[in-house]
Length: 351
Image (tube, rainbow, N blue to C red; front, side, top):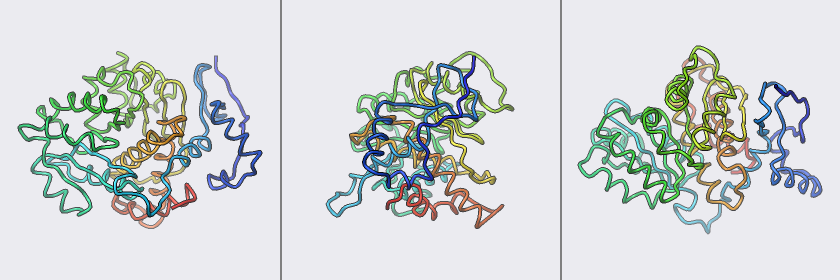
């Protein structure tokens, strides 16, 4: 019924070590990645139909797709990310998602927010391109005109649950699907998906990022079964929901981050911060959208969503831990942003 394995195909001392192996080992490692050879995590209880991909394999896949900095690059080539969110009550969330994307290496971020939120978000950073369109009379058309310039779209941070805004989300998502823009859906974007999950069925370039409560709501909406939110989410449940949605990728955020596309699974167990302040999930979204664009834009298309998710979760935990070591109990999401470049270099062994 269940399988346990104490064997790993390859073992490394860290991500940096992946890129200092000899040519024979490199050929073997490439073969392993290309053939999608997997192993079962000895710490997890898995059904026979599920396989866990190692973080080493996934981080290597992500590293292959990171743009090499060069003076020949043009503004925008490393990513133009869109964030749909930002309301009167919630202006910080889209800011954190946008700044995370910029600090991890995308070139431009467009924030599509409500009119009252725009001046506040603009005041946070001059780097952000802010569009006060979400509650405008022609919101759907105005935002859709920008979509061809967007490489990846985040829907949800600070969005709120305004019925008028929810009304335009469907057409915007459909237009993004037509343009093959990868999507990261979080927070109130997930609340919208609860009642409209058919819109993302079979969209394999979509990543949902629910916490435990959001996951239980979505699971009930899609599967018709209630699960106990006071208990840790099972790996099998994440994989089953992802499969039911047509292999949409789900990154379920918890003490151990579980990511699955209904076929493969990755579990991030790296120590993060015990401080659970607001904004950390928004930072994760920014990393995730940038990595997802890099991966879909590149020729190395193995394990696209899972490699982007593994990189984002690992980096997010690294920076939160680093900030907590300095700021302790008083750590804020804004304290984490300065550590993004340092942790990125440490994780990927490059600028």
